Picture (cartoon, rainbow, N blue to C red):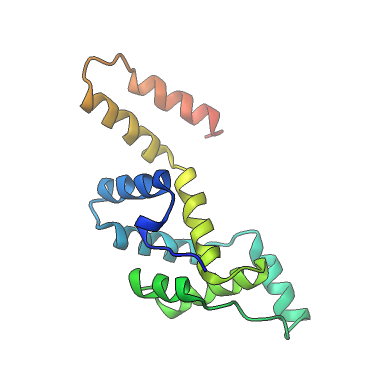
Length: 148
C-alpha cells in the first residue's frame, strides 16, 4: 500500500506540486484533482495494454483497491470515470491503484511545461533581483531544447 497524501510523497515531488498549485492559484488538493482528471482523459502508452487485456484477457485481475486508493479518491474528490481509467491502467501495470497514482504524481512533478519552467525563472528573479537572467533567451533556449 502506498499513501498518496501530499505529505506522504517524496519531499521534492510535494514541493513541486505545491508550487504549481500556488502558480495556478489553487489549493494543492484541487490542483492534483485537475491534473489527475486531465491525465485520465489523455491517451497514454499503457492504454494499448489496457485495450488488449480487455479484449483478449477479460479475466485479467481488476486493480487492487488498497487503502491508498481510497485515500486518493476521497482526498482529491476524483470522479468515478477518472479513478476507473486510472484503475484499469494500474491493473494493466500490475500495480495497486494507490501505487500507480503515486508513481504518476512523481513522474508528473518531474515533467514541466514551458510555462512552468518560465515561472520558476520569474520566481528566482523575484527572490533575487540582482540575478542576471535574460528571460527571453531562456524561453528561446527552452523552446529549442523541447523542439517547439
